[in-house]
Amino acid sequence: MDRARLAEFLRTRREALQPEDVGLPRGQRRRRTGGLRREEVAALSDMSTDYYSRIEQQRGPHPSEQMLAAIARGLRLSLEERDHLFQLGGYPTPRRAPRTDHINPGMMRIFDGLGDAAAQVVSSLGETLIQTRLASALLGDETGYAGLARSLHYRWFADPDSRRVYPVEEHPRQSRLIAADLHRAYTRDGRNSRAGQIVDALLARSPEFAALWREHPVPGPYCGPKSIQHPQLGFLELHCQVLVDPDQSQALQVFTATPGSESHEKLQLLSVVAGQGL
Image 1 (cartoon, helix red, strand yellow):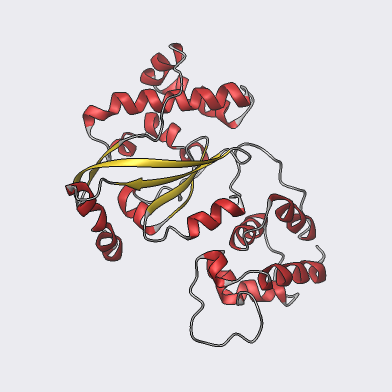
Image 2: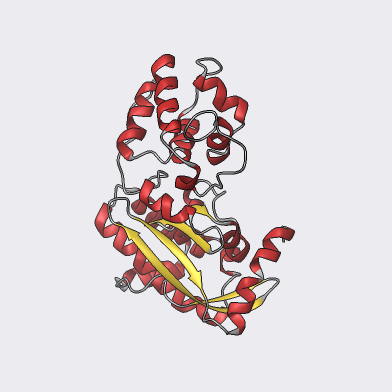
């Protein structure tokens, strides 16, 4: 690990960012230098200010690959910058694959402006990479899963609890849409891919999935109209607008409701639900 160059690289990228670039208020306190403060980068990277500061000060432990990936996301690094960060940290360049935790900086800039909306970024395998607090209040926290369960495509067929937010009558339609979306990823990435691992696991575990898979389902509007059965707010009829990033095989999903409708009023109440931690 090159501590000096790593610290310098992080400092230059931190100073190149303004609060507005990452959806933060500038605040009243005068900034001694341009760019973000260390505590702001630490918060964006989900780590303590002390831990991040020690890296910039060329001391402390050797940051893990997971920590460097979090910093890359917090600093809104491009893939090329992320690769350079890993090399400075003494790690091989992360393999470029359709399944990645790294979110494109342009996608993150759009996401940063959606703090008051129910929005999330998902991979082509249904892995939720980041959610606004309202999306978490609407759908539950989908970012904390591990292994194959990170994929909603897998959880939908392997874990009955994953279906609770959808009315029972919607389950067959959702099953077909999700199976078709996984079929698209499998066709693109091949059997020896993460999509292939999910498919093999589901074929062995879920008769429902196996039956759908034999039909070679064709992808449709995976994130089209949504019927949600929320535990506190009840039934909501929502629309899902999608912005796709072809290079990253990721999509930004924003959940909305028709203005003036009952579902729109309930969607406004999500901020209350989120604040109560329900």
